[in-house]
Image (cartoon, rainbow, N blue to C red; front, side, top):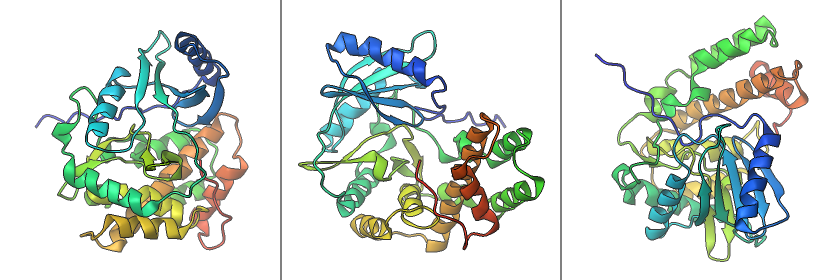
Amino acid sequence: MAERPPRTPFVSQPVVDRAQAQARAQQCVKELGATDLTLIRESMCSTFRANDSVLRVGHFTSDPSTAKHLATMLRNAEFRVPDVIATWQQDETGLGVIAYEDVPATGYAIDWSEVGRMIRRLHTDIAPSDIPADYPIASPTDLPWWNFGAILTRLEATALVPSQQLSTLHEAAERGAEWTNIVETTPNVLTHGDIHPGNILMSEDGPVLIDWDLLSTASPLWDHVPLKAWSTPPWQGNADAYTAFAAGYGAVDWESDSLDVVVEMRNLAATVMKLIASASIGIIDEEAARRLEYWGSPNMTAPWTWG
């Protein structure tokens, strides 16, 4: 039987050279006639604000123009997402750029119940076939940072983590191995893939969903995992956020234990990737140390910092 090809998300690798990303953004800003480029966030992409635009610079797995096709489809379906103003194809360094309309800050608290209703509508009203053909739709089980065998081997190669603590991480991965079956349980629906406070903007009209880089097909449970993780220890989020989201979303057909399994594996992925990032400077930094400590003494560890 032929091996199933991996389903890669729109963004699958981080920007490494952040200075290069800023230089690329500066070039594009000139074409927009904007000024005052300001860094907003560094994550998988580098994100900047320039006048009334927000520029995301990243290693996209398809032409950046496909982001506009997706935004147009979602807006036509009455989902609140930013419009795409302009796109620039990948240059010789592999960096592409997408300019979105800026959503003015309102200072309103996120309406998590409304976010839950929006995600329920995504799951029920939008089919994978509705997505523009050129925009990637991923699978959670193909995300490289969820391939625990590979990323733990990569972490071990850094020689940064003592063997006893490394064994604890391996044990956690084995304990949660059923996560793949959980997220592939039918029915599979279209999922945003990364619902947390950093990807919700509150406009005058209500929540705006940004960062559709991890658009996937999976069990509906997949869209509950990020916010559930953020809302509970060891993260510092507010448990009321997930409670409101779940109330807005409505009835589900999975057991809470299944959600907890996948939440723990998300925390494991966050730990290992933070440790691998630490390897670039040769030491386990303070945040990475807190995350590593959790797996040996989950009831005693200091809270984690989001990001």
